[in-house]
Image 1 (cartoon, protein in one colour):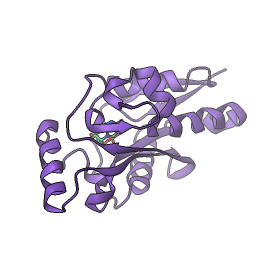
Image 2 (image 1 turned 30 degrees about the vertical axis):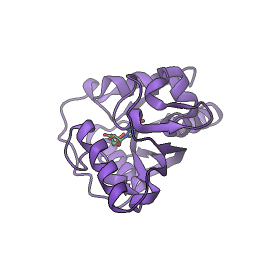
Image 3 (image 1 turned 90 degrees about the horizontal axis):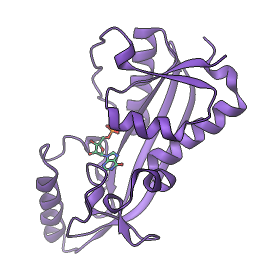
Length: 201
Ligand code: IMP
């Protein structure tokens, strides 16, 4: 029998991506839409790991389900790893505006581009205990002109050098094979396949 695992997200795009990566793992995925409404926790951690852990514990305690939470973001080397854990709200919600701000900060620092990486930390909690964690990263470069229409967030300015394309020029499946989130959830899939008891309540 499959055990239930709550993916602590209401974002259908993210769920689709995660469901694809976890396909074949011995779990039935639930989302926050399958639970009574729960207020969002404040994501005030200093690191991706802190935020993933606090969200996983919060939702596990609120719902009683084993809960998986992730926290991710972009670290730009030339900007001292900004925007980091602030990626979603950094310099407004509008991505074209964020992209222009990045270029402006590059000019101020006398650089034309920068190495960058996406990081995704996932944590799985059973009530208050963290029972599994994994972190995935993807290394790339920031380009001046956004390219591509797939994906979301900073994807159009993140060049993945081995493919010579930005993440917004990859389709979902291709992105998952190399992305920070893809790698972190692939580690969870492997763990679930070898430790099916993880999802036992
Ligand atoms: P979250 O923690 O997964 O919600 O991600 C926080 C923010 O990081 C997002 O709102 C985006 O700005 C950025 N981000 C995380 N993952 C990606 C990605 O795969 N592509 C582009 N931007 C991302």
